[in-house]
Amino acid sequence: MGGAGDPAPAAGQSLAGCRVVLTAKRRAAELATALERRGAEVLRAPILTIIPHADDDLLVAQTRALIADPPDVVVATTGVGFRGWMDAADAAGCAGELLEVLRGARIIARGPKAQGAVHGAGLNADWVADSETAAEIKELFDDEGAAGLHVAVQHHGSGSDCIDEVLTGLGARVTSLVVYRWGPSPDPEAVSRAIGLIAAAEVDAVAFTSAQGVAEFLATCEREGLRDEVIEAMRGPVIPATVGPVTAAPLVDLGLTPLVPDRFRLGALVRELSTALAERCAAELDTPAGTLRLRRSAAALDGRTLSFSQVQLAVLRALVAAEGGVVSREEILALLPGSSNDPHAAEVAVARLRDSLGDRSVVRTVPRRGYRLEVRR
Image (cartoon, one colour):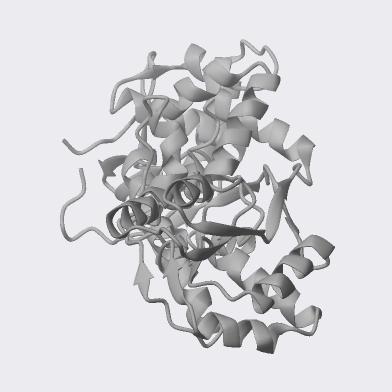
């Protein structure tokens, strides 16, 4: 393997040859750009659509009722939901009144993203759930009590997470505000294609940003008849990556071990996924021309990203898999299109591979037997 002095791949190509499925629609462009900047191929398969309630008469009516009957406590469960609530109030002409009411309440945020949205509205969060879970909020109310309090809870699209029920059981009066809800995928065909690729382990990772997205993804796999195959793929070659423990929970319940960053942010997810992909997806061998790194659809030699046809990649994979052992002409021929038995076709394929490598010493001819990579042990 390469030594400490080997040149590292350029930052922009650190994930060249890796293929990642994104299941989110919200902030998908940001996540895709960060991965593509590192050279990954990104397949977008949004499993759900967020449907805002900005023009929902019920949300506006509930907001006006809350202004008339101010809460003692406000629970912000999501950043996008809290911002959407402020936008809806602004569109209805009552944002100023709502902010005055919220300034007089104790604000509880379910994690840093909700806290950021609260701060963005010019408010302060009095308490933040470090784990970003509803369970931590319920524990807070269990410990402190809620009898006689009027609590407003801003919910996300997948429901209350039983916060309302806990508060009601503790004697609180609860006002629920659903600011957005989940809708069907905007591109079912892309989702179906992605599920097929995951089941066949033809991608390297699949990323999730919401627990509801995971649940709908698994339900869609069931409808496609590929649920077992997808779960099995995520046990092995396909990395399931999540933005935090709440999103990871449905996968953990299946006995999977998804990637969960220490900090529940897209940036942290990109960094940890990049590290995991770099470790898992690259075959690496030392050759006379430098370190050869091979991924699913790309390769680099001595830090240079190489351009190959699909046939050349297939031949190179066979040589890399042999780790310096001989790959016969018959095995090379089996990788080529058509059904030629002409040894010359194998010679041409290897010659073209050598040209693309830019150093003919990397692939050696073994007389009367075939070809092998020149590997330094």
